[in-house]
Each structure stands twice: as structure tokens, then as C-alpha cells.
Image 1: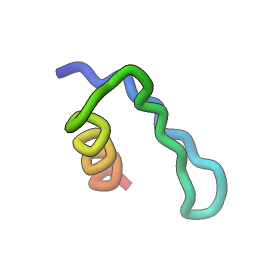
Image 2: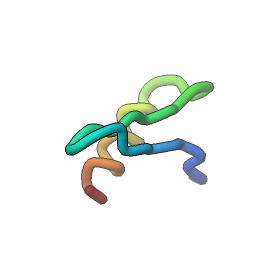
Image 3: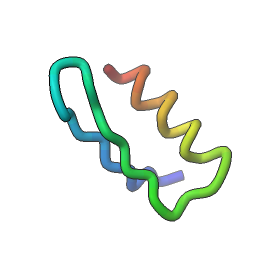
Image 4: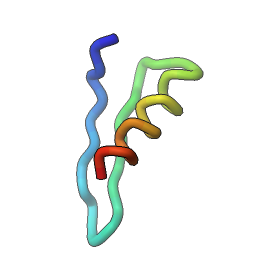
Length: 38
């Protein structure tokens, strides 16, 4: 599964994730993977 999700820092310890166009459960999976990388 190729991820085309944008994770951008917005401040100290804060991020935004753009997962537009995806339906459940993919946004949750993307969020979990992003949090593991931080």
C-alpha cells in the first residue's frame, strides 16, 4: 500500500495529517504508522 499522506509539523510536538480521499480504516492506520516514526 503506497502512502500518499502528508504529515507536517505545526508547532512544538504538534503535527497535521492530510489523509483526504481515504476511508476507514486507512486514516487510522496511517496515523499509527506516523506516530511510530516520531
